Image 1: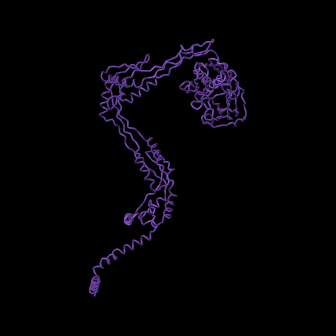
Image 2: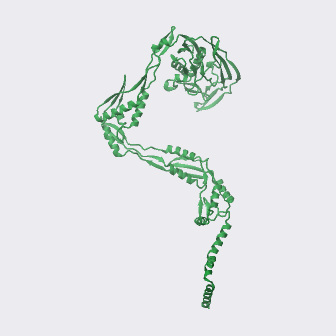
Image 3: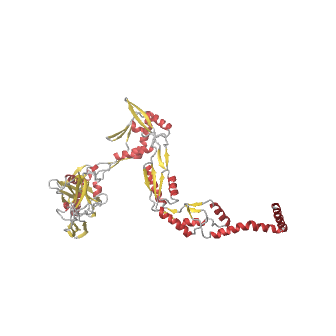
Length: 597
């Protein structure tokens, strides 16, 4: 029975095809073969119209079937849980957090990219994209970041971890009185692989995470000096054992010994030009001196020599480097000690004893004084030292005198001691406390001489040293490089600055000598207004002082505004006039209270 049914079905199919004409067969198969897939494709297209196709996700956040708004919302919700992220870079026991304040994820851009998959410019392209994403298309999260900031942070970390390769070193050792040359092996260095590290950082940010920890990739930095090059240099170095080069300059002499000579050898042959230039520059620091004018003193109505003038010297560095290298080459060839003269350029002083009669220093033009009762010993030392540096100074006609430039470096290295100074709104111990007593006194001398004051600053608060005689406003503070005192010599001749300190009377005096051109000086009394009482006393705990100890480090002073008028005339005509204003802050007394047990 079953065989019969199968036979009938087969016969029916034959009849069906038998009745189809040849011209109908192709359209028939087109409808059957193409119609069904096309119908499915159209249904699929309508089902996902404006929605993300299946198997599409962003950082494993499935977006299938979501429109753009829904997709963006899903991505935004993830960001609220994982942003802002924290990235820490690690190397051994060190950690370096990165600043990600400029990081911004872009859920709108990412959701749009997910929606665009399968929606290209052509049907074939769309089909390819859909088929390619069928196993699953997981996109990265789009974000923007300040690239310059990240690169700057990475570079800063790289600088901390960088270790240069150390080349082999040639050195001399002595054993039983016998010198030999040895080679110390070099050492590999390291540097951060910047490109790989940046790629790792960007890759780690592709999917939002609350905390990211990355290891810093490093590269090995090897020395460029091979063992063969080191051995060849060692052999050359042995030729310099017990050899010297003597450098001569007038009554000065320097000896370059064998150990120093060997340091100039280059592993690449010849001598290291950089080291020779560096040696030349260091020698120049020892030799170079500015010309020094003769200093004078006015006494017994005449100018006498205080100290003679001195030529300036400057090393001819290029010439020295060239001649020094020649001496090294000859020494290597002959193994005989070398002597060379140091080439220098001499500069004559502008003023010598021969100029004394043409300087025009004939009489006293003005004087300024101040008192320093109550100063501690170190402050008096600094006042004396600073005033001596300005003693005997000459200022040419038309020249502007700078107090800071003339005084030079104020530090422990130049002989100054620590005493109280005003700095950053506090009275603290600092090098050169008391120098402002000198600048204040010189300011007064310049005023009484009738010279133009081109730069002057008042102190931050009223200092009793400067008010014991003239009252507030007649002071001038200096602090290189922020505050300077400058005057201009507008007289027809040189002026001579002369200082005198009376340690018994605690009095400092500056006198200015030159040629009187008939000018007259008018200085008004100080005007004081807007007085403000001192702030309440301040007590601060200090663990360095024993408990129960009270130490005062700042003193109270009234705040105020002060001014005085300065006018210079000649033959009834005003040369210049100026009003000097000073604004003094109210100052509180500060006490340190010991807490140490």
